[in-house]
Length: 304
Length: 334
Image (cartoon, one colour):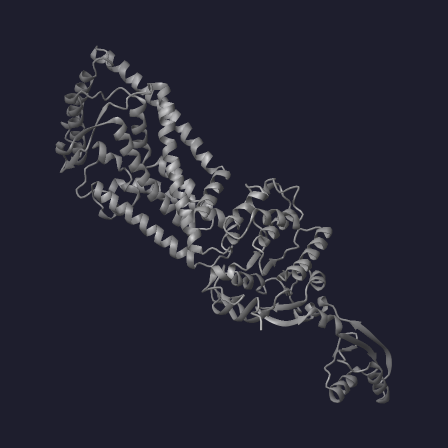
């Protein structure tokens, strides 16, 4: 079996007595695009900082391509390119000089590679301008360029689409998909743009109060569907679902019953409801989206 | 390692911080040499009026006159003993100059370069070095660039050591530019000569008496080099301490502020140095190393050049160790 690109084992972090992150376990394989989602303050950035060795976990181990980040920092980081929060570059240098600074820290980076990454992020025209003249979107592009310099196996991008215009976001999405498909790069993206994550990622994890509350593939979310019924006696129907099929349904304030049928046929369920004397006004199939799942799981929390 | 040090030096140059420091240096040297010329001229005029001889031709008369006036002050019973000792030292120095044919009044580029650094070593040069060093680490922390710097495949200690080495090199650049600028600028006022004139160095003060047994007369150029070597030592010490503060504090303005107030506060504390023993272990009161060369030191028992150098070295080593430990273990939360 191949060594996983990223492994988090029981990661916890306390900062000033507060538990920011608790018992995170996560394994990412090669060429996977992974979305790390969660409301503000859920611990996304703290987790990312631990992965790249900026802060030390209070408990647990992090391995990148098999190398422990705290023990084998240099070897582990040889496989990582990252942007943490906003892409902060040296404003008094040009984009090119910024890249040269980082390139000179890594012997593997060649001159060809530098012009290659400039090309990849579409920065040819502005690369010799000072970073202080760049827009946020331009700085994001430059940030992605510096992360790609060492041809990392693991690319970590914290809120990478901040400040990009719609065309830039599409371009970025294509670049990420391309990197994963062609170069086999594993991409770890934290984002608050859920529709973005849904289009870009293979798998997602949703973080709440420092723990992963859901880790699933995007395919699975999209394939699951929820049925909504308007019934004369929804409470009875909930009991029937529970007793006959073991399905947990829920009712909202408008007395609409919703449940996921998990492969059961809707016709059979409806027929049984009618047979039991429940009046059926309508039944509606609804495809799930990541956004609904997210809101469902992080209920009551502010999403920004 | 070389590439990392090169990166750091390039950053300081492009940030224009080095340029700013050299600019300040230039302005101050220009003002200082103009001031010196003005004072010398005024003194000469006054003395010529008073003694009736032309001071520029008969400087030994002038020195004798000065000795007489200092002796007059020594008779004053209200002057404290420590100051009396220092006045006695001045008399003996003037006498030495007269005996050995050294003109204390005139100036030259050679003389200016050393006298400028003697004045700058305890406040001005440290301030410039603080501007340079206090930004080294906190500059990266306050702009957030430290995150990209510390997530490369380079261990943290190498980043720290490369920044420290870059600082040592930048300090050399600042001092080399001080010699060059003070020579070039003061030469306009006093002429470019004076490098071979003899300077007396090596006075030792023992119990308020001048011990002339170690006195040697060295050529000006050699004396200037000695002064700048001591200034570099002071720069390294101040640089290390500012570097530590910039590791501990996340904001550049805060770290510059902390260092400047410490430095200024230290000069106030130096008034207590004779009575309050603790103060002599502060780095701020031990910076006037060049005073030990020229002998113009306030004599306090137990404080000599060896003591000051040891105190300063201990501060520098301590500061480096604290920076190293803190930087390699801290969580980066900016």
